[in-house]
Length: 257
View (cartoon, rainbow, N blue to C red):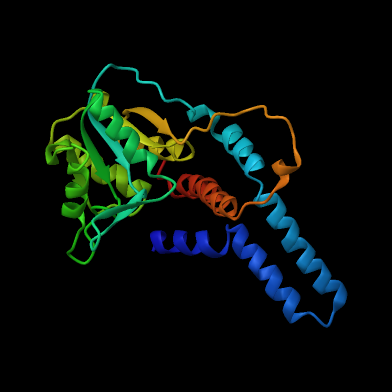
């Protein structure tokens, strides 16, 4: 129930795109009331200009999550890199990996493995390998990764988690069964997702080191008119950012962190 409610909240309540759509529809339905129509459509335009501003988005994101803007390793080697899922899915027909804006979670872990800094990669709760209705794309994923020189033995899969809490609980259970301690593990996830992830793991009594991805370099570029150009993809990224904020609050209320 918590999982389904969080998805509905993400789509209908914390999405600037949904807010803009509601205002546009309201303006159309109330088009005979010119003042209301103009107000709704003007507000929708303002939402697009503000939440479509990529520069503003990156500055707000960095300021709110700069505590986790770190990609440094405390130790020279870790037995296991824990990669939080939600970064992609597999196309069975083509054998291709379809990554999203979180795909750097996977690729950074692969880079660390290639450099000999992690021994194995545990993927938890991702569509590339999760079991859904008794089926999984794990083998398709492994064949794809093999084309990059990544052997099957490089990966361990937790295939049932649907959210951050389940990621932590299920993963810690597996690691304890494998007798791998927290100080031999490196948690890899997006900068804005790191705080909640660490909190979920700490709640289980398991506190790994961490390595953030998705850290944009902040530039002090000179202001130009192009800085104000709205971008539709940025609207989607704001939704993800709001999802992290609301998720953090919800997890605290539920006692998950």
